[in-house]
Image (cartoon, rainbow, N blue to C red):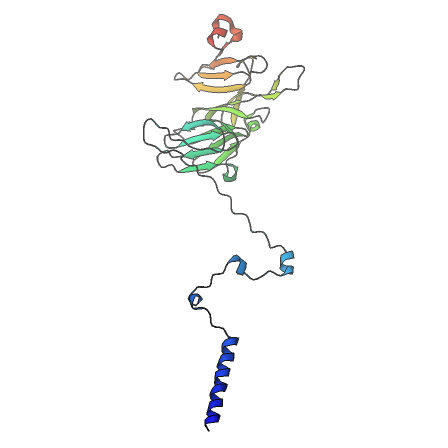
Length: 288
């Protein structure tokens, strides 16, 4: 009887030893370690899946940059600097917002107090890439931008667009300047179309000039050299307190070409100051 009990205990011990060899126990130090999936632990990709490219994710929606302040400061001896992706060509303050036109980057509108900014581009309905000049009508609340593709008009909610040919210009050359006379009556100056392929070093210029009109009524009058202007390249416009319009004109190529300052009195009479007008005009020692 004792022999049978001895062999039964021996058999149970052998069975216990065999089970411990088949199913090992995890080390004590690893029993409480969490399981972390890493890149290497991801399931392998089959060759079929590898040969079939996954569809490309759709591009993110286009976002319009809002502008940002590089160096904010309230000290009088420091300037706050505003970053721009393009060369800034013109600034205008409308009483609430600062507007900055750029070369190839559209137009930026921002509040200098809150730094909230909006960039107007072709993606948001602004028709110009390059802005050459800005004008604002406080009474009507309209902003005007002249540039590479004509005239853009902002009424506070949307942009309107007029091509140079719609204003009676011969060519769709860029508009250089814009001035509000009264209400929706504007003065608009255009660049001349320059062709350097003339005879010798001669500059071939065409188009340009000055237009005055009510853009809402679409009624335009045109003024050109040599009667009203000294040159059809109109560079800038100014209106004085007497209602006299002043026009800066001229192109500088290999040699100075005809140009100077013309003015139109409120009654419609034109007069000129230029290099070709002797003692009554600008002299070389006066800077023009």
